Image (tube, rainbow, N blue to C red; front, side, top):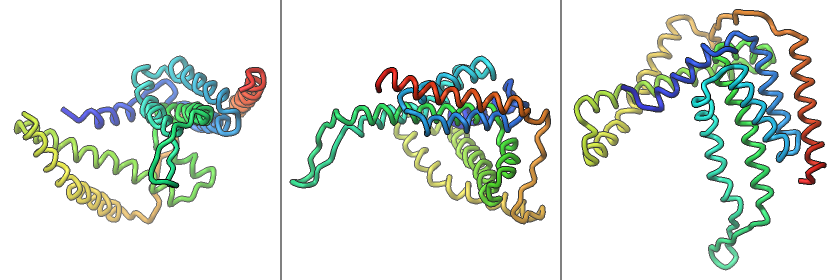
Length: 260
């Protein structure tokens, strides 16, 4: 038995390695997702944001054949956070005569635009995360000139997330086997003990990983096997660029037509 969050992380990693697009050239997937992100940032929020969201959802469900429940669950985390925090943009704080709150309905267009733009951007990153393994992204990041130390930090952080998650899961499983979560008093006590032991054990595992890397001659560059499969097609990259450009033009045209 694993904690739900740990199982979900492993599910995402497995889908990224086994989906229909997992062997497609990473450059093409980066062009789609990063290009879609650029469209969200450059175009009108209320038109391009939802358009990019719908496009990425269609690609995820019908082209990459991702499980709908997993895709919607991963996308639901950032979108849910956006929906929960957007109402705070309609609240104004005034400290002139003490602390006071004021409702600002005039800020509704700003909050709506923020949610629309951010939801489209979140769908881009969700599509990339569920269709592309991390080891396949690394060569592309190096090829575009991203500093090597940033790439290595990304890889180590990705690995440590699983190390920390497995540390929590093993402690939780051991406590569950000893009936540590029977009743709210035991659950509270077991949760406190787990939190107290987590940091020490996680740092110990991280230190072991550091020692292992040093023993293997690590000098600041983690070697990653090159991606197998066909190289990116210039024709497909041109088609992706044309499609995203058309989407951006559509966003501006729709904004003028709807007058939003």
